[in-house]
Image (cartoon, rainbow, N blue to C red; front, side, top):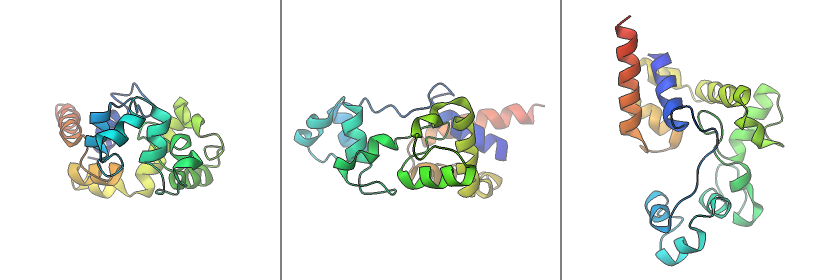
Length: 168
């Protein structure tokens, strides 16, 4: 159950293990749908649309240990790695726990070693094995991303991995 949980969630977060950096090329309409509280009107969303750095700085400001929008922390500590490690608090904790330079050089989390290590670290500190043992795909989704974004894809991937193991 643990392997299926880890693989299905990291596969979802990394776009099938193709991406190790969050893609924030959003249209105004998508910004309003994904982050309604941060981009509540079309006028505001249009000021940020298709500008990943500006989007990150607004979407992630004043939370997860990040400073205000002008601080640049949102873009600096954007989602990276196989599980999309996001926010300064996560980068601080990961950097300290695994003795690396992720806090001062967050782009290293895009390298294969750190992309995998950060996912394993995040999985462990967030006690995701407990949810995996219970086969709680929804719970894993909430713990990883704070909501149910991508739940259908995660469930489909989880079912495929489980089917593979059951056929062995």
